[in-house]
Image 1 (cartoon, helix red, strand yellow):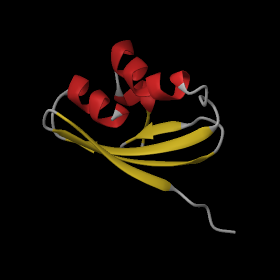
Image 2 (cartoon, one colour):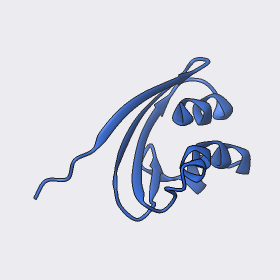
Image 3 (cartoon, helix red, strand yellow):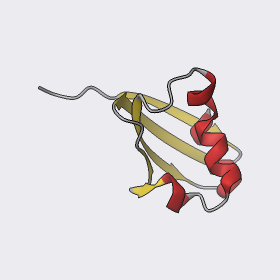
Length: 81
């Protein structure tokens, strides 16, 4: 059985994020690193998790992100968009 990912692109300032989402247990990886390792500041992690908490879907999806360009704040915003 193949796993279906849904895909979206987000941009903020000069950062670009490609986000792949599938049903799962809530794992978030950014550039092949856990979110807590990639975003060193709590603010960045909070920005990324906001849409999931707002829709009460935190822990229901696995998210894989490829992000490039910009700084940490811009990258977090690109993932959120």
